[in-house]
Amino acid sequence: MGSSSERWGSRVGLVLAMAGNAVGLGNFLRFPAQAVANGGGAFIIPYLVSFLVMGIPLLWIEWGLGRYGGQHGHHSTPGMLDVVGRSRFWKYVGTFGIFTNLTVIAYYTYIESWTLGYVWHTIAGTFQNASSTEISHYFDQYLGIRNGGVVNVSRQALFFFVVTLGLNLWILSRGLMRGVEIASKIGMPILLGFSVFLAFRILTINEGELGAVNDAIAGLNFLWEPQFDSLTNPKVWMAAAGQVFFTLSVGMGSIQCYASYLREKEDIALSASSAGWMNEFIEVILGGSIIVPVAVAYLGLDWVIANVGFEMGFRTMPTLFQHWGPWFAAAGGIAWFGLLFFAGITSSLAMGQPVVAFLQDEFSLSRERSTLVLGIAVALLAAPCILFYELGAFDEFDFWGGTFSLVLFALLESIAFMWVFGRGRAWEEITRGAEIRIPRIFSFIATYITPLFLIVIFLGALVKPIGSEWTSAFESLFAGDGWPLSHDSVLGRLMNVGLVDASAGSSASREILVRSGTRLLLTLTFAAIAGAIFVAWRNRRKEKSA
Amino acid sequence: MSTTALVMMSATWLVIASVAGVLFYRIVRTKKSGDSPTER
Image (tube, rainbow over the protein chains, first blue to last red):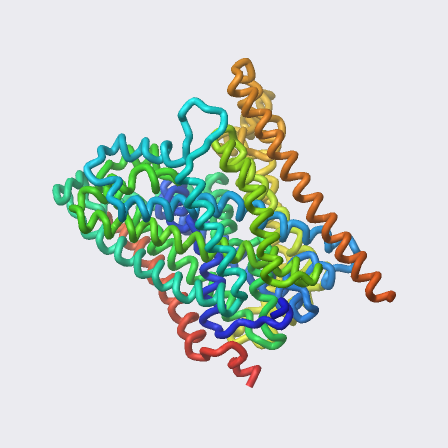
């Protein structure tokens, strides 16, 4: 079946696939960490404001752009932007919609494979009777890191990566309805079931019970106690806007791709809103009720403040489940890593689909061949992420592919749709077939406020100061002491801030080499995609003239 | 759990769960793709 003739089988399937695209590891691991670090309960105020004035309008823009592109036979962003833009330039902006998916899927599938590996180890009883230190160190052993070597190789991590990638490719090769939709319809309810089981089990843990040192509810209190003075801190607003942006998976090209399989007059206003709010439900209510409460119950508040974050999901959670007795420990481990796996796979499928659709639409490849090309490209790009994980290749992929490009692309596509395509036509596109009435104010918000929000986030990422302390950074600048550029800002990374200072050491030199090499690889990947777009459009012109 | 944390959490959960629930209910009610009122 060609890409153009494919359609969603049901609206429930579409909304679950869209929500599955948005619901990822960040919902369970990133949101609680951001809330804890940025004002607790008060964080939700800028978070919801950002969701309403940036998140929802961006969802509508991407759904509208996608459905419009689909009507013109394009299921990936180069073709979509070509039909809404008024110059040849815009299809090259669409390069981002292939580039981000291809680069993010390369490292994201690797993370996804860890969760599968940990499901297996939970079933196999690897963590039974192991100390917390042993379990924490097992993560290093699993990835083959911190062993003094330059290259990180672990047979089991490679094995689970190949299995995970193979599973993704197999589902994608089955097509939209038989593959992605069925996977979402199965995966999302399981994910919800696992989340509810874990949240209920965790929140009923009391101090002194099953080795807990605190009531788990204390973790909820810690997460939700509002610190209203934090609302005047720009850092909190930047963090909230950033979290909303990344949790919705906007700026990637995957939402546009899924929406391109809609019919011309099919609703997007209600479906997009539903998928967005479903993501919020899973993130705020379920995501916020698992990792922080369980960590506070077993490890205490101070430990959580210092350690909550991504690796905690792997290094610590199995230890905490060990207190539940053999059966509940196994059930907890399978539920936790299983829900992360399902959250991951519904997202990685959404990343694969635009690349497959691009090859199908623009190079007339069959779905099977397109999937094979995707698999080869992902394997090649994943290799440096895996092998040079410790030296920063993985981190560079995450930053340039999964952070910087997303913000830039979302900004450019919102300009293309609301300004170049035109506010009136864009609004007509978003509201055609709408099953809910969208207040007219959102036309103004999507045209002016959303791009402004994105510009602020982009500039923030460009010159982010150390520790995201904007107030003290401006004080330092006005005092003539310069701008304390963070190593994690766009400019800081390009200038190797933090690494150059330590360049006397050979490991720092190696890291600079790997990071620079990775950036070169990413640049070449971007150029290769732009080249493929050039070739595809040249071939199309030749076909037309013939 | 403190009163302010409880109020903050309950209010947020209520808003998010209600909106998500109502929107998804409307989706389920129409069920099939292409089965929207405008399509009919």
